[in-house]
Picture 1 (cartoon, rainbow, N blue to C red):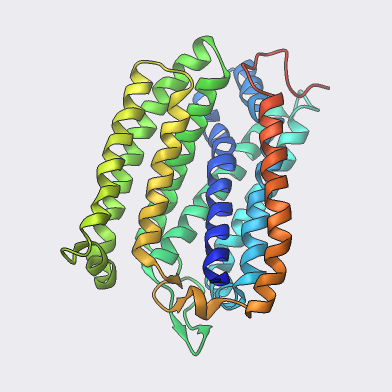
Picture 2: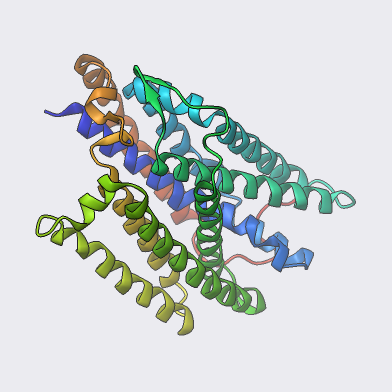
Amino acid sequence: MDYALIWAILIAVAVFAYVALDGFDLGVALLFPWFKKEQDRDIMMNTVAPVWDGNETWLVLGGGGLLAVFPLAYAVLMPALYMPVIAMLLGLIFRGVAFEFRFKTKRAKPIWDISFIVGSLVAALSQGIMLGAMLQGIEVEGRAYAGGWFDWLTPFSIFCGLAVVVGYALLGASWLVMKTTGDLQTRSYALARKAALLLVAAIAAVSLYLPWHDPAIADRWFSFPASVWLWVLPIVLAGVTFGLLRSLFKQQEGRPYLWALGLFLLSFAGFAVSIFPYLVPFEITIWEAAAPDNSLKFLLVGAVVLIPIIFAYTGYTYWVFRGKVDADSGYHD
């Protein structure tokens, strides 16, 4: 069995699960500036109150799994991305603190609203910057990071950071469409439509830039006839975009969030295809970065037990707290 490949798939699943789940509650916070009424903001926070901290389980699994299973990749990526990683963690901390304190105060509620917005914005922006820094390439010499402190900070990485912010806003607005009613839901539809168009434009821009920037990616996508099957992805992406916009304009409550996840999944698959089999593009492959097989086998036993349990309690939580949220439900003193 190819244990390194199995673990690469598991880490990818954990990362996508984090984006799919924590993405929408970060997105809800990013939409706060467009909802000024205190009652609207209360309802928005109440839609994510039962699930926001459980969603971050997948971030722990992805980061911890990378350290345990691909130690060489971890040792290279962390020095390259120290600053955005620290910024992301600080943002998540401020967001979590704001979430708890906001419901315990009246006078200082605007301060915690700002903390909630800024913390979520910093976390989302940092995640996108890390993605952009990895896609544009990381300098490696002798199995170690050889770049500088600010190599992660480029126009492309900033653009990717903003794209992730827009994507999370789309997930947040789609989530609010499912969980709310009335004027709040109507405005969420409008915000989701705008975010969807911006996200699709950003995906198209990144998809055009990467082959131009890196000959290896260009060869992967444009070496005919070997690359013909890869063009299924952009065709399906166009179909998903149509489905998302159609569901938003027809105001089909349950579908926009699923279509938005489809956009993220196809983008994720496209990036994976572009850099496979490298874990540190285009320097260190999955197999070069992996721990010894004995370690991978041992850790896989634990993963086979724990990952289904995480899926089970996550699914149970969402089932228990299904349905619409109003001003009288959620966190209270």
